[in-house]
Image 1 (tube, rainbow, N blue to C red):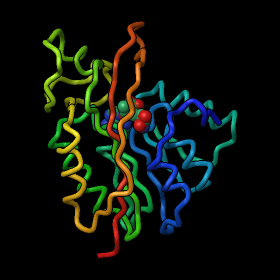
Image 2 (image 1 turned 180 degrees about the horizontal axis):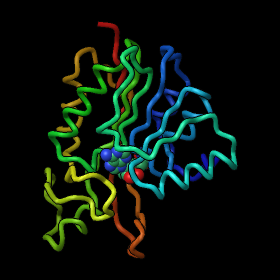
Image 3 (image 1 turned 90 degrees about the vertical axis):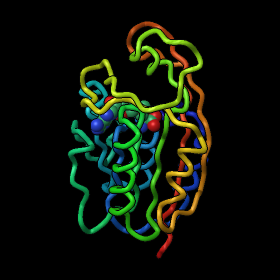
Image 4 (image 1 turned 30 degrees about the vertical axis):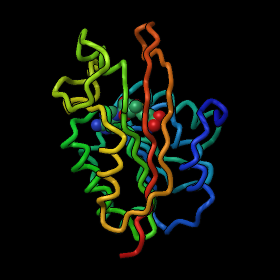
Length: 214
Ligand SMILES: C[S@@+](CC[C@H](N)C(=O)[O-])C[C@H]1O[C@@H](n2cnc3c(N)ncnc32)[C@H](O)[C@@H]1O
């Protein structure tokens, strides 16, 4: 597994050491698999990963073959995916940058409702993203944090717009969820080439909250 390739994630480390309720685990927008691979290793047979982009799905499918991860992968749109009625143990939402803020809010609310008591919600928010700037076209820096109707230019991320968040605003959204207990919140700054041969600065807020019994 390519564990070493990802930055240290205190929220994920805490979850990997926890006893969580029985039930399925979902990673929506798994991308390169920062959450997917550690969760699959710790909770074999329970993790379902969805990514709308065929190239991430294909790359992850190859990893499954190589490293024999016991995980189910789907190349599907998370927004169209029905969560199981019996409840989920962990829900990771990694694709918020590719949704307008109203869509993030309603998806987070739906995920929270679908979590079992004691379950975990992990959401990553873009707090600065050159990729979004690129999608928006030339603009003045710094990027205005907001919600944009402009779609991801990859052509696969649905037509759900883009969003860049203030840290306080993102935390406010999560802490307003009934029974939410904050486990971790930290920023990851990266420089990534997203396929156009140009390095782009990205900054994401990684958050982890637990749904206490209410
Ligand atoms: C910023 S990356 C996050 C990758 C990884 N989860 C992480 O935290 O580092 C967002 C991922 O969400 C995927 N994505 C975007 N919209 C999606 C949707 N509607 N359903 C499922 N996946 C989506 C993209 O293809 C991309 O791989």
